[in-house]
Amino acid sequence: MARIAGVNIPTNKRVIIALTYIHGIGRTKAVEIATKLGIDHSRRVQDLSDAEVLQIRETIDAGYTVEGDLRRTTSMNIKRLMDLACYRGLR
Image (tube, rainbow, N blue to C red; front, side):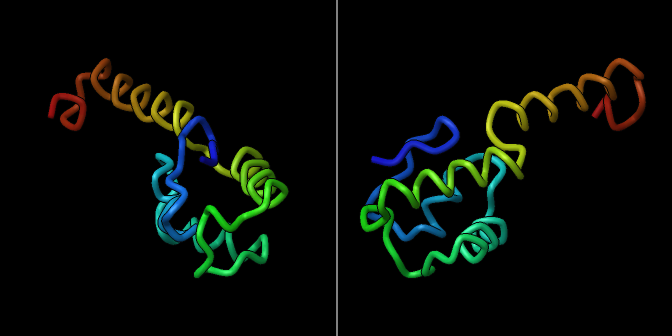
């Protein structure tokens, strides 16, 4: 089982679908990552080599805000709006 950004991604799914299990990566970003690394979209995670998984992990760490950092940023933005007592924060 491949572990990327602290998430165990399923091994029997296609790479594009499996990357969407990471919070902050949707379908568009998953396609963008696979295209950038030259990984075929129809390949399964179990067919990836360790080097390819490492490349995916490094690309995500370097260029995208995902999982804990993204959740923290989102909650801080909401907390800021609540502290300001603006309409969006009260909702």
